[in-house]
Image: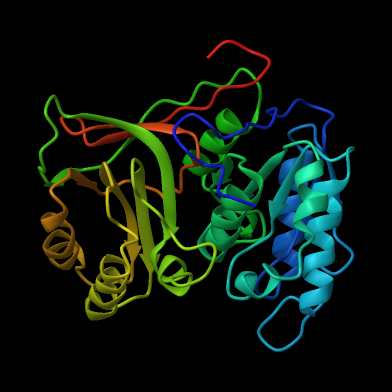
Length: 317
């Protein structure tokens, strides 16, 4: 199936209403049961009916159970017409192992619904964009310290998640703290579909059917616990593979425990000749705000901001 994410072409899921049924799945690393329980209660407190995949609490090496079990939970939830959102419990590692196990034909036949996750779930954002042409939600996950920790959720993160998930919510722009590269922006406003996600995953997807293609798009990048030289290596790989060719602009999220990667990011991205804003609270750390992938986004260089435009198919923009 050809890639369907082009400007304005992504299909959009309905946003949530109280009473909706949502499924928690674990496509990547092992899940802490206490964090999972707190995250489930957090979602239930929003008026949602929460169901948990059969294999979520399994463990096999560094994975949340077998590849077959993790893939089955994900596909079953996506294809279930009674499920309004598929929410990934956490990241870690292992999502790329599932991409060849999913029945994309069956999943394409299902109605679009929300897919929520970040970090290793970047692989699903890329694959769902290519195979299903559906906008997906890059954001915090319930079985992490940020939402499922013993001290309760990070309040800014949780408030933004509610605003994004539910009908009627109108989240404002996500604001960074600097213009890292001015580029050639003209009026300083750049619009296009948002793609990207976790840098390490995007590098790992090079040479696969799901590799990043940035032409005509706004690119979101973030990572965690990567030294600047490794960030340099991954950016160089993406550039040499042509994955960043034609990008309209870059929005850089968090770089938790990455030293000071901004000089490397500026040096590697500046030759592309497009604006780069930085310091957006997206990716890892607190707060962690949500971005719709595949939906149109707008960078405003003057305010260092990214607005992710979500259009509910049954409501005005």
